Image 1: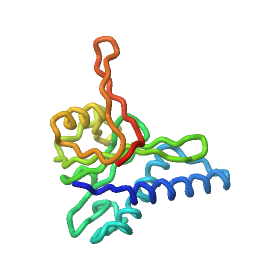
Image 2: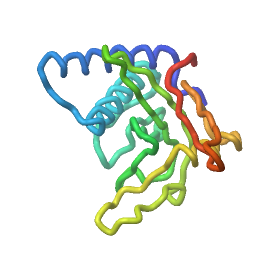
Image 3: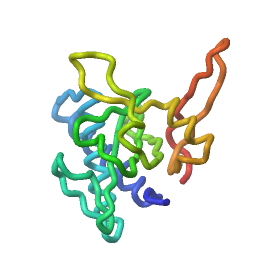
Image 4: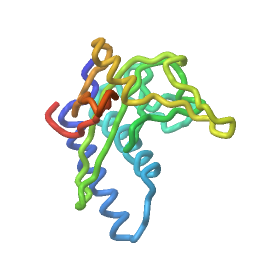
Length: 174
């Protein structure tokens, strides 16, 4: 499935830089979580504008994107795993976005997609924290089984002593 193309990446990159430059000019501090939410919204906008039949409902109880009626969820993080809440634990195709910014707010992205079921998410081990997670190690394991679509960027496994680690590389060609 080729949901993410060069035009979408170019639009998302330009919109992300424009928005974060605006925040800087206005002296507005945004957390990484808030920036991830903004990037997710900008990706929804780019997809709904550039993919025929795509609609971004912008309602929490709805999927992030519908393409010709088919639901897609977007999960965005600058860290090592993606979080889901009550509504995002629905089954369907998930687009995983990881982002980095350079000192001039130029973004680079890793994007991959995979169909998930509710039990694919790892439940929280805390009584006070509800979110479930899907981490890069699980994504990499599924990538090795040819069950992940990589749109941009790459995953790399390496050994640190006896432990296998996974690095997410942003950028690169589509």
